[in-house]
Image 1: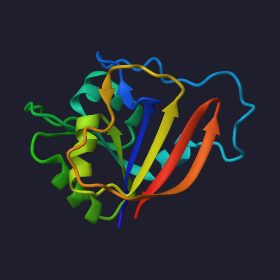
Image 2: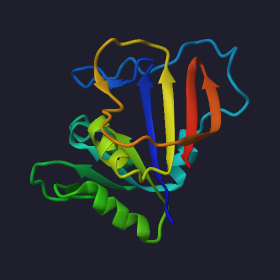
Image 3: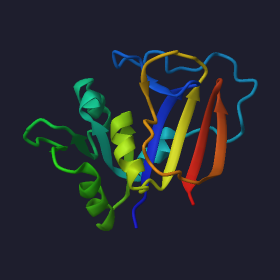
Image 4: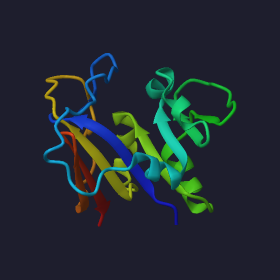
Length: 173
């Protein structure tokens, strides 16, 4: 069965964007002295993905343009017609993606944002969590985790360090 993989970056204090949705702080620094031998390979991850799921705010910031060769589901409360590789979902996005998960194909990536991730957390259907921890403390912004769901036990499968960014890959037990 296809895996549902969450792939996001967050600040050390748990935010995925500033309050205005900007994310220009997502970067490492020019010191590779602590880099691990197993660098994070985002392009390789994308080779095994054929569906990307994002919220409307990500869509409005043109983040879907990075995924022109994939089917992109956009969770929204607005009525927007599908076009090109974009499918707008105003119904229950989790159920739609769980149906897609049963079909043949590659894995499915949850791209953002926090409210979208929270909907998947509430039904505990994320198979892998890839989180890049950015070396910055924002103090406020849009959180990755909203809470309100049962505890989910994870197992650390891999960690990588790339120019000060710690990338953690957990699997759902």
